[in-house]
Amino acid sequence: MSFEGMWAELLPVGRDAGTGGYHRFAWTPPELECRAWFAGEARRRAMPVEHDRNGNMIAWWLPEDGTREGAVLTGSHLDSVPGGGAFDGPLGIVSAFAAVDLLRERGATPRRPIGIAAFAEEEGARFGVACLGSRLLAGAIDPARARSLTDADGRTFAEVLHGAGLDPEAIGPDDDLLGRVACYVELHVEQGRALAEPVGVASSIVPHGRWRFGFAGEGNHAGTTALADRRDPMVPFAGMVLAARDAAERNGTVATVGKVRVVPGGVNAIASSVTAWLDARGPADGAVRKTVEEVGAAAREAARPHGVAVELAEESYTEIVDFNLALRDRVVRTLGGAPVLPTGAGHDAGVLSARVPTAMLFVRNPTGVSHAPAEHAETADCLVGVEALAAVLDDLARG
Ligand code: GLV
Ligand code: MN
Ligand code: MN
Ligand code: MN
Image (cartoon, rainbow, N blue to C red; front, side, top):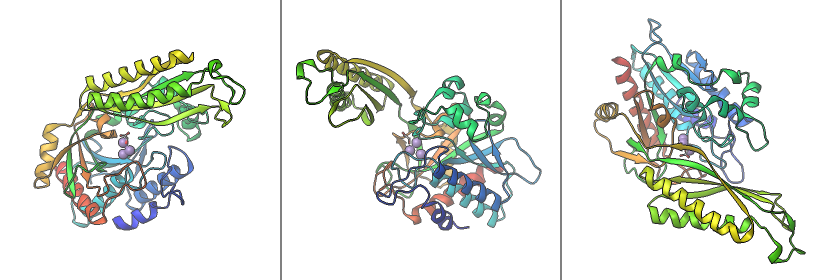
């Protein structure tokens, strides 16, 4: 099946008819449908699918001699943020199947296995920690902590894994699998407006992380409670949002409060508690840390006069990722030259780069929008991306 054919099959899965945004959260029905699609595409190509211990899937094209070592891994993820775009994640997987088709049509005979990976819970939209599947695989998160992560309905990651037929006690670093991987190359839609050509190559991922702010006040009646008697957590929460913007401007970073939980959430009730999540990123570790410290200090200060308690917890942090220079140069050479650019978005490639040489290809995004329905890539650019990925896989799988 062609790139366009595969794309058309995936397009309706998990798409909200009203907004056009995607809701494909790990192990929910739309994401399971994407996983079934993945298995079907692998079957169609006689590529055996390996289900690892951490909820990730890999479809293998094995060389004729059956070698399983020294693999060239590609792929991305099938899950989405709430209301996300069609391309973030699936583009890398659809392009990988299309690239394998191209290589086969051209009679290529790779000496190394080529694997197409679908990593679990890359966005962290269900359990809060981004790149959960690749972090577990690479040993970048404590398995006990991962097991205890909960979704919005209070279901633990362990329960959901168990429901998916996986053993929650078996999750964690998988040196057997990683030991078989020589390198990883992820193709991804570019997520800003930084790429003027159809395809580029990543240099680095900026430091980024997620922090949870808890504001504990006192629920009460919106009409009968005098202002002086209130302990309203919404007030310091509002201060925290403004402080995030100010701190980002001061420190040359970006900071976002995109998710908030208000309990109990009644129009005519003062909230008893507010939980808000801060996403902060920037060119340097220190600037990101300083941003978060300043937001924390501002939140506490805003809370004090209202008798509201503030808790601040780090949910995840990823230091700067500089992709392997030798592999990046080799990829750029294979493409006959390409723009090289950093990104402010996190990726499984960033996690894996701590364990294996890793590179990324970006496909131009004309809207410059991502994590939203307007995220886009022209089909012509996607096809250039498929050609580029095929050339890179072919080169890496030869030697
Ligand atoms: C994931 O795409 C992220 O960068 O948050
Ligand atoms: Mn994303
Ligand atoms: Mn992504
Ligand atoms: Mn991402």
